[in-house]
Length: 306
Image (cartoon, rainbow, N blue to C red):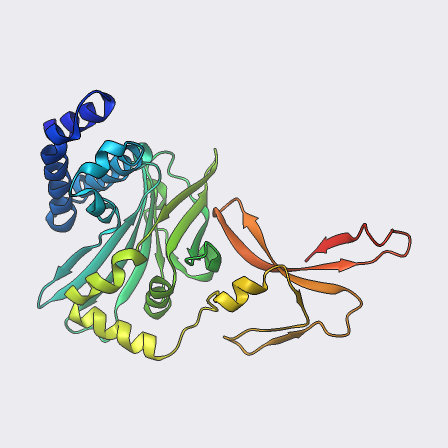
């Protein structure tokens, strides 16, 4: 911790030169990376992840940080998975966190594991609230590179182990193929739940290292390849859709289900649009229509949102 303290003291003193502290900063980041990747004490790795997240937010505001050779690697410390691969079991774990100072009490672990005799992996999301122990209406949003919500997983739609709910822990058991597909196609994951005081939100980027680090777990990698081969269940937002936002539409086809929404012949004009979700801090796609009211001047359309 002395090394961490000395690095933070450097950033608090704008008169100090990066040349004198670059070595300390890089050693600190290397040690944090080593703990995240190899330490078996979860609480300690959690503290180091929180430190890395806090450091990133702190350091990027200081131009001296980018004079360090290791500055380009620091973000990777936050998005790394913990992996275990033995003859008996393979495991991948990623921790989603809120702002760093609340991390000891609020976090969510994405878990993928498979034993040597298992035919399919086990997938879960373990959500923790050690602050007031209450978590209602857990929601998990998968968000793409355009910051648009691809899908939302609702607590009531999956099997939930609430055995330890009174202690602030709920485990959502998620179909492994759904979770693997989500991690392969989304950019970030936002977990929200309702407490007596607030709607609590935390965001992570497990997809950043997923496709690379799963190579350390051959059985999980094999399961991923079989899952991807089945096709993409998510209607990902393409450039064609992005370019169509704000444009009139007459027909929409769900590429996953094949369902068609035909607006041709409707008395209103429909538009593809986005709306901001305060809960998830991302956009979602929706349709709006503008209908002319006979008593309203043509230059004052009334807008109705579905």
